[in-house]
Amino acid sequence: MASSLDRYRKDLDALIKKGDLLSVAIHAECYPKEVETHLKQMGDKAKAYIAALPSFSEAYQAWYSESKVLIKQLLPDRLDDFVRHYENSRIRKEITYANYKIEDYLQGLRVTRGWEKDEVVGPDAAIPQFRQQLAILKSVQGRFETSLFDIRQLVQADLFDSELDAAMELVKNKFTRAAGAISGVVLERHLAQVCDNHSIKIVKKSRGISDLNDALKKENVIETPLWRFIQHLGDLRNLCDHDKKVEPTLEQVRDLIAGVTKVVKTLF
Image 1: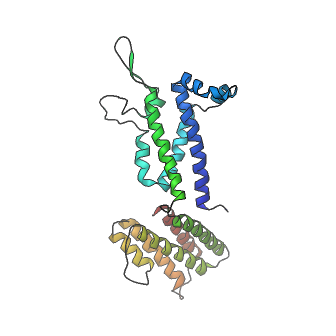
Image 2: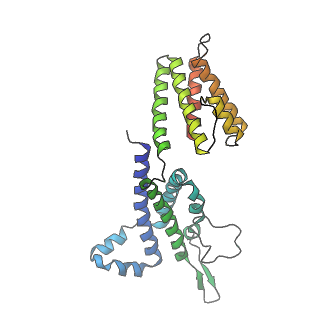
């Protein structure tokens, strides 16, 4: 089974390759003669290459959506910058070369002046915006190659998925306590990782779900509804682990596994 890291790398490589093609495509749409001249060294293959280029307007949206998801996951501090190069400002008083965005290009927006219709701003103004988006995407690649990229969470995500799958198999075979115990361990480990992510220190050596949950709420990482939800999951875990007088039901353990899965996928 491919790891999360392998999947991200594969997706990133494909998006960068597609982005490079889109970069040529937008240049070809704005400066067809210039691109044709530049590709003349390819000889007879030049026309075929140009003909095979994707339509920027048709292919960009899928590329943008997929790239946005990847950047949000791996380089969240650059997500706003990435989006800013696409979306035009709704409050701009005039459209200039500096504030022309890719969204304007997709709408075919041009700004002209006077009776002669002299072009003030045209589609070519979107080229540097796309170039910056592609550069941001390519910067994600560097995180795979340097120590700045912490892969622990990606590896841990794979491990948690496997353990929760194992818990579901135990439930199918009516081993409710074992399934609940595994789910509780996954929840506790994940909460500990979230605390580390937010530099939250807990003095107690033996940190349980309740301790970790309270610490996250105290530091305003989570709000009261989520705190209560995790507290409920902790109670279900304790029912599986500690309370030998009451047998946890299949429904309770399924709720525990589903709840832990939700927390692991949405709380970072």
